[in-house]
Image (tube, rainbow, N blue to C red; front, side):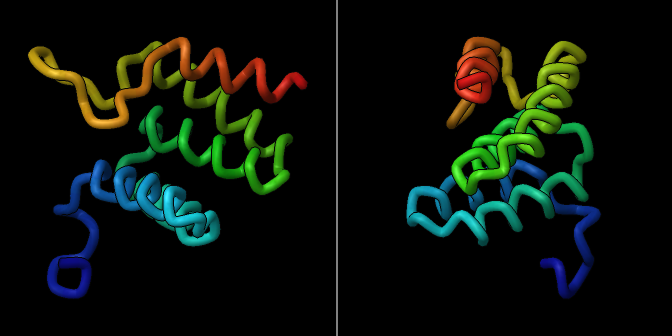
Amino acid sequence: ETERVGLKYLDAQAFLYKGIALLGLERPDAAQAAFELGLTVEAGNADLLYWLAKTLLQRGQGAQAEILLREAMEQFKKGKHNTTTYVEEFYQTYWPDLEALAAQLKQ
């Protein structure tokens, strides 16, 4: 799709799930790239910011992860996260997830 129409018609969740899958395959470099590309599609998406922060922390980049987590928390409060009324999203991010990562960053 990106070759045919570019990124403008793609959903940022595709990059979220791709990144999460890549983390599961222990490919943090590729996961980081997926999350970052997703943020070019939907800047300020709290889920992408959260997972990118988790990835950076895993890669030893705690200072950058902390910056992204703060932004994720701000965007989450504004409602810029994946949610639906009737069902839970796959890998739904909740406020306690953000708090847990913040506590992990303080260690």
